[in-house]
Image (cartoon, rainbow, N blue to C red):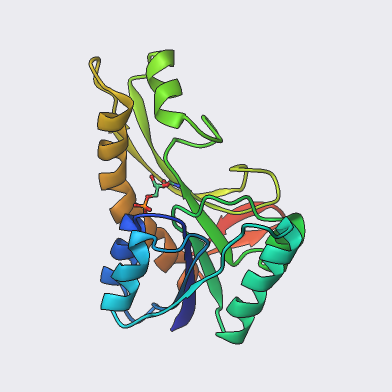
Length: 197
Ligand code: GRF
């Protein structure tokens, strides 16, 4: 059973899904938020999971990341899951957790890295969007993809309507992808996501 820490900044719907889907392969042992009062913290506390608020304000990126890293090591985290964590992590932090650090992004990566994803998908007239779980590498949203799920884009979609449709598939996709990693069915090797049966 892998000990998983989840990093959040906000409402924590992905966190909730990850907690609900826990099985013999992983356990969420710690939730860290950089934002005090993030709704996701309540979800963790209700589930009896340890929480920590580490504000990023007034600190260098490296100092903040070192604090987070220290808390993760102290808790004995084996895997680190970013779930709506709105901070860019330093190269040093990312390298320190190489192959053990994953993120979910609300697009079909490698398309639409970064922010304003749904706006850009609609502006482009795409008929398909979705979500991707990927290993985190120093370049933003550029890591090898572990799993994707698709949703249709409707002609009259607003960014919010599309975001809600994508979120539904995220909540199923993220636990599935985490279980692949927790059971060593996927690993980061030479910059690629390598799958075994
Ligand atoms: C999700 O759409 C995720 O893809 C993006 O941020 C959102 C987080 O939502 N990275 P929540 O905090 O899990 O509710």
